[in-house]
Length: 115
Image (tube, rainbow, N blue to C red):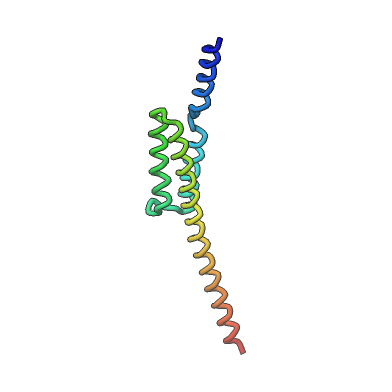
C-alpha cells in the first residue's frame, strides 16, 4: 500500500513538473513580431533582431520537446518584439511632432510678418 502511494505521488510530481507545449505563446510571439514589423520596425533594429532570433530558438526547442525553454524563449521574443514596436512608434511620433513644430513655426513667422 505504501509503495503504491509513493508511486502515485511520484507520478503526480512528474506530471506537474512537465511543461505543456507552448503553442499559444509561440503564436503570440509571432504575432508580436509581425505587429512590430507592421508599424515600421525593420531588420536593422536590434530589438527586432533579438525577437526573431529568440523566436527561432523557441521553435527549435519546441521541436526537440524542450517545452520549458521553448516557452521562456517565446516569452522573451514577445517582449523584445513589443520593445521593437514601441521604439518604431516613438520614431514615428517624433517625426509627426517635428512636422507639427515646423507648421507652428511657419504660422508664427507669417503672423509676425503681417502689418
